[in-house]
Image (cartoon, rainbow, N blue to C red):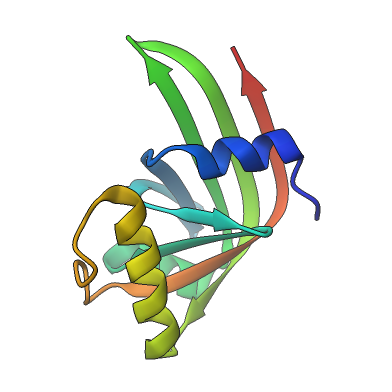
Length: 127
């Protein structure tokens, strides 16, 4: 799927919190995550319930919104298929990229597992 160029620009623009939506046995779970977008894929590193849910059901949603003074500036919603990446070298490189985006040390969140989301569809809106 091709992500609209404007949505790509927004996804790449700021170190914002995204909300990852997973669902297992009909029970949705939404939780904040740091992310990085590039070339039709979103990378996150996570653990706990989010990771367990993705392992059981790889269909996910991601929502990112930028606000200014409580007013929305833009939003992007992504639907995709998540893959848990077990390769530790790939996970380490992804953690460094994500941590750099958010200003954390390169080795922060070493216990988290890399999840790569193949974007199936993306919608966006600017306000």
